[in-house]
Structures are given as structure tokens and as C-alpha cells.
Image (cartoon, rainbow, N blue to C red; front, side):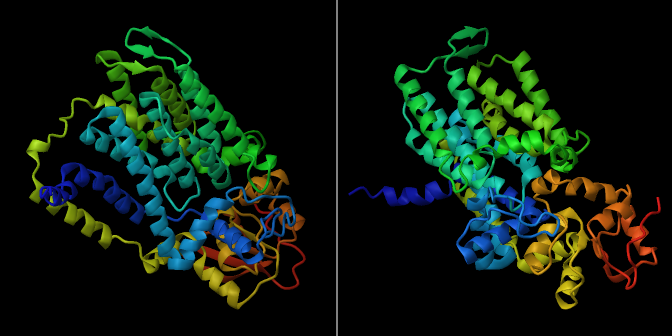
Length: 495
């Protein structure tokens, strides 16, 4: 009997690679603790609640008085379910814990991808930590986290198929089936898959750039996988309509893309923008001055990531994933892990400290609620539930989902789904009325008799000083106004 194996277990647990692998997870805990709450989570929860209560998928708008019954599909229905179950299990803390689990799975899988690309665990951890900070633009309880998890799994399978000639390619079609039912980012997965396959059709060497073609067996397997994945996209409750939704977003929702903050390009004045600038300089210097070999596949994927990330800040997460393996490989000057230099006692102490820090920073519902009260109209919702106002209330679009979840008897003017509101002109009217562009006309058009607004917009000031309106509730986060009795219309015509 081998008596040495039991002794190796604590050595593995307290090894440097294990300790380093906990660093990205601890970083996620710390960053998540200080973030806000994504406004979309509320209508995602409501969608899942409706699905559980009725057993039917949503096919039309149920929540607004501006576009009631308008055809609409819950195109992220599968990813909404885990968040709803997390809420039922642990309220707001349960949702936050699920977010942490998803982020940890994404970046631990990315760590594995980086290690397979570089063979250096220290360099891989550095690359992943930089990727985490770059990706914070999309942190939050968001359905897109499932999409990014699927993306890393896809990259792992493709990388292993390239390097070893074998991988569980059979898992890719089911992966795309899950993906299309979880989030529209499946289209990014199709592009990444296509780039990887197409780059493998090129053979040659150009200085430090080289490319090798797939073997006939590899290419045949990828072709079959691609066709099966395309078919798997149609395995969803909404058929072709769900498949073509990304095109709808790209070509029909122009106002959405131009107005929503995460669709703007990168701000290089902020910390994330400066980190991105550092990344670009590091890649440029490495390409020009270092004797590094570049593979066509990684160049093509990196170029795609840079285009998306620089064009739209929301895709910095995508760029972080695609760039991390390249960065890890270029950090080859970082000393490699040497098992002979292990310090198990020190590693154990650091591991205990990291775990203690994570436990200490476990989300608590009370803390999250305090943060929510600063961002959402929690006080006004309590007032509305106790003192119902007339049906037609104007609300800020980032608060629509919150009303749909916490004040379910209230029909909203607009919410952050945006799409159907843009199609019917409601979003344009919303932007106009907030900017005092013919506010009287807009308020009359929708027969608005109440308004729930933040203190900042000019419209709030105008309504507060309009004798046709009265303030019925106010706190630092919001102002709730009601049209005074006997007023036939809101004045709100002051510039």
C-alpha cells in the first residue's frame, strides 16, 4: 500500500497554484461588494415569476399601459430562472451570491484557458486579474453572465481540439441551445466559432506570424459541429424570432444603442480606460520589440475583441476574455511555478485569510437594500402600495422594472427592456419629455396623471413648480407627483 498519497493531499490543497487560484475569486468578492444593482434584474424576476405561476412563456407585454399587449418575447427566459430561484432561496443576498458564483466560474475557467495557453500559473493569474477589472463594466446580476460562461467553455473546447486533435465537440451544439435561450450573446459565440474555424483554413508563416490548417478529420468534426449548432439554435420556445433577435437589436433599436450608457465607446479618462490603454501598449510593444510567435487564430480573435470593446464599452467583458490568454502567454518573463520552492505553511495562512475575507464579505440582504434605496424609488413604492395613485404614471425607464417587481399592481410608462417602447415611439417621447421638448403634448398624449422622477431632470423642477401638480412623496432618491384635482392637463410648458 502506498502511504505517501494521503500526505500529498494537504500539499495539493495548500500549494501555490491553489492559493493563486483563490486570488481572482477574492477579487470578485471585493468588487461585487461595492457595485450597484442592474435595473434589468427586476423585470427578469417578474418574467420568471409569471412563467412559474402560469406555466406559459411571455409573448406580449404585460407590464405597461403605453404598449399593452404588444408582441414581445422573454428572450432570456432560461437565464432568468436561476435568478428567480436564488431570490426565492435567499432574497437579494441569494441573487448576489449567484452572481458571485457565475463570475467565479467564468474567471476560473478563463484561468484554466490562460494556463493552457501559457503554461505559467503566475502569469495566468495576473492576466485574469486584469481581465476581471476590465470586465467590471458588465458586473451585476445580469443574464449576460451565462453567455460569457458559455463563451469561455467554447474557447476551451476549441483550444483543446486545436492542440490535441480531440475535444468534446459534441458538447458545443447543446451549449448553443442553452446559450440562445439564455442571452443574445450567442451571436458572439457564432462569430468566435466561425473565426476559429476559418483561421484554421490558412496555412503559412509570415515572419513571427504563423498558421496551421486543420487536419481533414478535425475540419470534418468542426463542420458537423457547426451545422448541429446552427440547428440547435432553433430549439427554443419562440423559433426563428429568437434566432433573429440580435439583428433586430442591431438594425431596429438605433435609439437604444445611441442613448444607453453601456453602448457608448470607451472612456479613456476613467480607471478602466487607462487599464485598457495599458493593455493596448503592452500588446503593441510585445508585437514590435519582442521575439514572440503569433498565431493567426489568436490575432483574429483579439482583433474582434478589440473592435467590439473599443466600439461599445459593454463589450469590454468580451475583450477581457479574448485578450487574457494572449496576455498570459506574453507574460512569459514572469517566473514560472517551481514546486521545489513551495512554502506550504505560508500558502495555508494566505488561503485562510482569503477565505476569511470572502466569508466576511458575503452579501447580506439588509446591506443590499440600503444600496437599492439610494438607486431606486423604494420609499415611493412603499407609498404607492399603501396609497394607490391613478393608473397612468410617468416613470424613469431605469425604474420601470423595479415597479414591475415591487409594485405589481402599477402599470409602467416604460422600463429598461426598451425594445418595444422604441418600436412604438414611447422611448422617443420619454426622452423628449425629460428634456422639456413639448412636455405638455407628451403628457396629454398618454393622459399622464402622476409622475415618479428623480430630483435631477428639468421636468421634475417644472412639475414641482406647476400649480397643476402636487408633490405627494419625496425622499433623496425620488419625487412622486400627482396631478391636482380639477386640472384637465399638466401645464409643464415652461422651457
